Structures are given as structure tokens and as C-alpha cells.
Image (tube, rainbow, N blue to C red):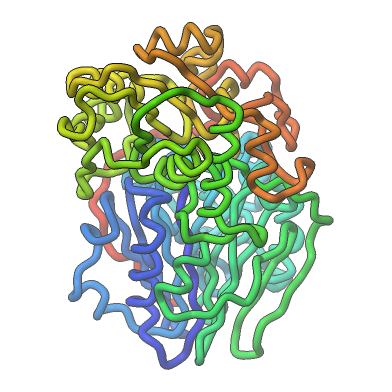
Length: 485
């Protein structure tokens, strides 16, 4: 899960548009951020570890001038959390250069690595080692494959390469004068197209379009490549669509003000709460959410159950989402930093606490303990997604099967493990119906183990994530990458 943003807009301050677009997508990745800008002659790339507001300042943004830009905010699913794996990636070509950002995760990285290794290496720019492909992620491989187009346009090369990629991808990339965007045939990760008065914008979520004053045109369709330059916008269908959008975007990943496949994410989450209340009612005095992602579902639960809704937790707005911290230790440390219980709301009451999911159980265990310490008489946990039993290979760092609490424990055992008086998960059918999407158009693999894109090796189900290591990654200082063709 990452955030990508791209803009083609002559006469606009594309660097600042990209900055604010990434700011609106910060929830999708908090490890690193990067922006690349072209003035038509050269591409400048700046990236570093940290939040968007930490990586960029006014002076840095003012140094970017141009009419086309892309941006990326990352949380790692393949590849170490190091500067070398920050995006956009950059690579010279025989006709200039390319910078690329990727949201998703590919599952045929070993095949792609072989394809890159087989590229002709008699020219310096095609030598994989000469250009320091010191990364452990799939994005660098795609960049290298696209960069090799000696006898054809990059547009034609993309139509040739994209069908060979397996897995989830929403790409934005650029050359000195052109913006590109592409989405995998299954459309697992969202990608939308927007219009400015003097240009075009693409982004992971439509909330980012609203932030920069762009109007929503439509989704980039599954299996579609969009090309934007001075000649206008061109669209190519490089693969037949077979929509399998990630249902977890509705549950947790996307902003509540996003719209995905025509369905308001906020409305979907409220409906999940209503269905959860019908499926798992309980006598209680107060319904509280785990902020922020549990709030819409808790609202729906309270409305349907006729139980008062209230704030039981205070959230520190300056602490990142514990789910996407890069290590287990930081997840556990982040729980207490993130939430504290409101004792005067909790003491002496039977509490229903609504959350979006349980992955490892650490977060819920700490939350239940806080509520007990605050004087709750009973704590009933309700979850607006089914038990997570399978790892995700399409861009969410869920953990290995061994780490997933629902893999091996039944619902009563999980309730006991986290210290709750009762536990209820929404049914798979209830969750899917709340999204308003046909069940056949959604990926529910993390709940069912039915992967819409077959894995190349079933033994991977017991592993964490696919990685390809072409070189030993090393930490590096964030420096501008300047290309002078």
C-alpha cells in the first residue's frame, strides 16, 4: 500500500501540486516520500526517508520547475525500508530518462529479474550493475524494463511490458515531457484520473484530486495505460480487464472520503457497522470506535443497535498508523502512544468497541486492557471485516500465516487471547454486500485464501513476502538525481 500522484500541467507549480497531493495520500505510506519534476529537458528527483512534510520544505519545492511531475509515499511490502528503495525510481534510457512510482506488489519478480538480466548490456545505460540497481523491490525491475526501448517509443514499450507483469500495480511514470499511468488488469489498487484547468492529474484516491483542485474524470480502468503529453490524452487497453479490487480498501486502507468503483468508502463502512450489529447484537451501554478507521462502522453499529455512540479513546493525531509501522516492535510501542482511554466515559459501563480488523491481536489486546483499567464492566469487540487468515501478496504487509491470530484460533479463543468478553466478526457476505460491488469483482484472498492472480509457488503461502535481491542494499543520503541528456 503506497500513494502515487502524477500531474501534467504547463504553467502550474507542479512540484507543490504533487506535494499537496502526496500529503492527501500520506495515510497510504509513511516510510519515505519522493517527487520528480521535469522542465522538458531534464528530470530532477528528490526523495528521503520520512513523512512528506519531513522530506520537503519550501526551498526544496521552489527548486523544482517544470510542467510534469510524479510523487510517491511508501510503506514497504517488498524490499527493505531504506533510501535506495524509496521512490520514484530513476533510470536513464537511450532517449532521455524515466522516473516511476508504484503502488502494489508484483508476484513474478524472479521472472522479471531474469528478463532484466537478459537485456543487452553492450551499452552502458543497459548494464544493470553500471546503474546501481541497489534495490530489493519490484519497482526497479519494471523501471529497467521500460527504460530499454532502443527501436520503439516508450508508449509502445509499455504496451509490450505491462502484460508480462503479474500482481497488483498502479503505476505513474514520466519522461522529460510525458506523463504515464497504468493499472493492472485486475484493478486491485485504485487509480483515478482528474482534470485541472490547464492539465491532468492521476492519483491513488480521488481525495487527492480534491485537495489540489482537480475535478474527477474517471477511474483509470483495469488493464489501461494512459499517456498525457502536449498532444493530449491517449488511452490504450493493454490487457482484458478482470476486475478484482481489494476489498480491504473499503475496510481500512482508503480515506473515508474516497470513492472506489462508484461506492463511497464512508458509506460502505457505515453499512458494515449496521450489518455487524444485526449479525452480532449485544446488551451494552455505549458503542465506541477505535479511531479513526473504526469510526464509520461504530456509527453504523450504534444506529442499528440503538445504543448510544461516544468517544472512548483519545487519539494522538501526531502518531502514525500503527498498522503500517515497519516492525513489530514499533507497532507495539505505537499502540500506547496512539490511544488513551477516556475514563469518565468508560467507568461502570458495558462497552462495545468497534475496529476494522484484527491481524496479530496486539493492538486489540492493548485496547481491551486500557478499557479494563479505565473501569469498563464489560468489553465486547466487534470487527467490521472477517478473520484475516491468509497473507497478502498484492501490497499489504499482513504478516506470515504463523503470525495471523485467526490462523489456528477460533473466535472464542481469539476473544480470550485479547481479553474481551465477546468477539464478533462481520460475515464475508455482509462485508462484500456493504461495498455495493459484485462478489466476483473483489479480491478477498486475505479472508478466503482464494487468490485472483495465482501464485507462482504455493510454498509462498508460508512465507512473508516475495523479494528479489539483486544487490545488498545500503543506506544512503537523499541527494537530487539530475539527468542531462
